[in-house]
Length: 308
Length: 270
Image (tube, rainbow over all chains, first blue to last red; front, side, top):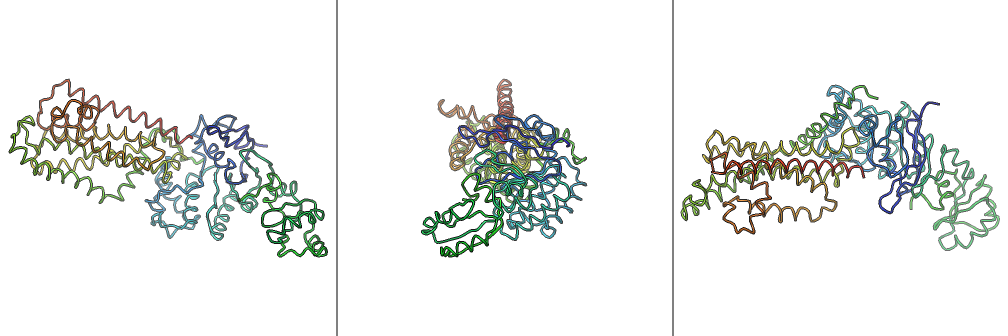
């Protein structure tokens, strides 16, 4: 196996008394799409800023392209494309100006950037907005522009921090499609997200993070297989009755989680379980059988939901 | 990696890339900048220079201003002040914006560009803005017949040095600011205003009681104004004092810039 592009061992970052990242280890291989999944405050963004060779670490080792980011910051950053959680575009400049000045920060020639802008405008579906000031763009357009900006230098690794947070479903799907294309082109993607569907769609492999630590690592399917059952039956009895019927339900399935608004029952066959519940005359107000997801993995690992 | 990326080149010219991006943004505001940079000192020149100047000269002639007409006496100070306010605007707002409001500096720092380069880039762009204001204002002084064309052209670099000295220090202050709510009030009312009034701007510093004079001593406006008066009218300052004024300004530029570069680096690496 070739040397990983990113190698992290015992990475820790403290802000005063707060330990934001607590001794995490992982590798990212070339061409891989790697995710850090976890709720807000899990330490994902802090870890990303260290991977981006901008923030310093408290302890541990980090190698990106074989080099320590604290010693070779500018050299490593020359290989990275960074898409931060908050779009930090220059809203007083136009779409194409934003791409242009960013290309200049990489010392790229005007000729190269001019040609690259055409390619990126097409990629980001912003051809018609090229001379529009950024402040006039929609949230989804700004996000696509931020991603396009991160690609202006043709980076070896693209780092995306919460790429679709705050976007409506349609804008998210457009963005996923664009990121999928990059993946197909062989760009190494590292992304953080607190959306389990995003992680399932985009990541070849991921780590589940909570409170600064890694709880589990694997492929989305592998993690689901390891930490959850094949199917999940979600039943609601109304907020007062959920607790009341819970003990009866618990006897019917392998594992159960009682959330404030619903009960999750883990099973190999959801329909069959639902029939059992009906036979026991428990009469849920609503029921839903679905496949297990990373949300269930997270719940299993931490006892909490991803989005609280 | 992209073949076109030359990290050595970026190390050398990174600050200029930042400055040129800043100038691009400023150019979108050129009408506003021109109005402020020309209008403001022009109002003072007319109101105080001509208006109050009549009173001053009726009272004591030119004996209080080393034999110089009142309007000419205040002109170098207003010129330096144009540079100072121009540099300040372009150091303070972009810095607080870059770290806090829109976090542009973090985007710039995600490239091979470093924090110190961003600091220097912002500073250089601010000087470019001041060059524009100062040249226009100098032409106005020629047109009003306040100064004669000649050695007085030195007013331009002197004003820029004064603006740079103040700008470098204020750049550091702006980079330090985490909570900006009271910063602009304090800066405008408790720093800029007293500095403008007590730096020998409208009367020689020596006419002030001794306990107010230190405001002038630490003020880049005073040091640059004194140099400017000497350049424009042979004001009668000793060579030693010329060297002192010049050295203080150069020292402020360097100290301010070094502190700013360190602070930019630290804050971006948090």
